[in-house]
Every structure is written in C-alpha cells, then in structure tokens.
Length: 299
Image (cartoon, rainbow, N blue to C red; front, side, top):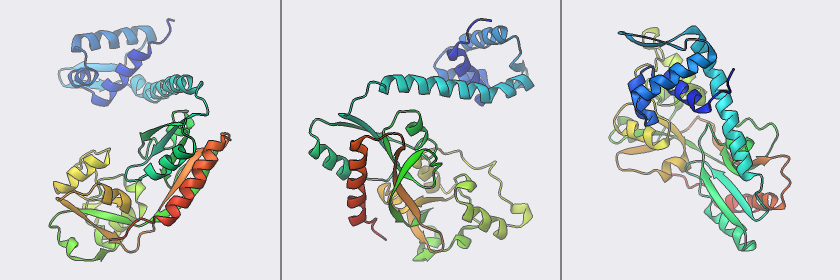
C-alpha cells in the first residue's frame, strides 16, 4: 500500500464537511475536476468507496463516515509535529504567548521585555477550542486562558474573575433593565453551544414547552466573537460573554447587561508543567501583580 498523502486526506475532510464537490473545491481553491480525481485516487489507494454521488447529491458511505475522525486525528498529529519541529530550536530569548479575545496582555509583555531587552515575544490570539491545544502541541509557551480548561499536565496560575454579560441587539426591551437573570434569557436563542453555558441550557429547558424545546437547526453557525456579534446585531439571537470581551468589542448596534445570578468567569495564565523556564515564572509573577491591581471595570 502506498504511503498516505496528507493533502488527499485534507481534501477528503473538506468534501465530508460540505457534501458538495463544488463548494469543497471553492474552499480548497482548486478546480472541481482536480478534486474529483484526488478523491478517486484516495479511494483507490485505500480500496474503499468514501462517497456516493448521484443526481440527488453527494453522501458519505459508512466506511467514509468511520474514517472521518481518524483522518482528523492524523492531520492534527502531522500539524503538531510540524509545529514542534519549528519550535524545537527555540531559545530562552524567545517566547510565544497566547491570549483569548478581550484580554489585554500588553502591559505584562512590555514589563517582561523591559527586564529582558533581548527577549522576543510573539503573541497569538486563541479561541475556546485552541487555547490549550496550542500549548500542548508546542505552538505556545504560555497562554492567557479563560477557565475552565482541561488542566492536566499544566501549571495554571489564577489571575482574576469577572462578570459574564448577555449581549443583545440595540433597542431590545431587556436593555431597559439594569441587570437580568439567567431565567430572563430562557426564551431567547443562544448563538453558542448550550454546553458552554449550562445555566442557560437549564433555564431554557424549564422555560420552553416541549414544542419550543431547544432546537439549533435554524440558528447560524458562528465561530468567532465578531461573527457572533454580527448575528446578535441582526436579531438572530444572543451571546453570553465575559465582560472584558463585550467591552473590547463595543459597537453601536449591540449592548450588554450583567447577568446577576450567573457565576463569574475566571482568567488564568497556563503553561506546560514540565516547562521550568525562569522566564515563564517571571511572566506569571508579573501577570499576577498587574491583573490584581487592574480589575475589569464594571458597567
């Protein structure tokens, strides 16, 4: 059997996500016939049929569906290997630090560099799905994270807590209130994974009759804060964000209110427990001191 071509696996995953060769080709920036040939070649190499194509469209075979998770895992491992190779030669005078949207880490980085003039610090914006992943695969030396995280094998230094707020479209009747409760939001559509805000999920389950049970089929798929706020402004639903994120992304067509009975979110600095670099310990000391005296402003 010939060695697997990672490029063909990437093509396979995009077709699996789109179930449409035309849209998949557009995403990959290649011609549709080229994509078809690459998938056919992959099927030949594996000795299986991955997709069924008919006049009604493209569907995945049972074998294809079984291979999706394996293909993702293989590509992730390959990407991690490439990143680790690039960072293997990183010296003590270089750090890469991640941060979640809304977190202002400039002062901490500036002070660390003032104490170490030869230090080069790169910063990387992360997301909920990548804030720990990029630590574990070696892309980041440290990351300013929003809890909770899977912290096994990490040193996690708590920094501060802050309220979480609901973001509503401008003119929404609920903005007439100074604050809201989580029960107030149960009948509004959340443009996030309900498991990310289990308190809303429980409130929605209690507030909605069976006919109005939580159904995300008609809701827009949004990944970034910017996309979520666009949908909020358009009246598609609400999002629940840390207050610092809502303040950072201020815009005239949305506004936010504190949620009185929702537990605060927490922010921490995380890095691999096996990384004993004095520079990381110093960054942790600086961040702890700076964030302790600069709490997030309340509305």
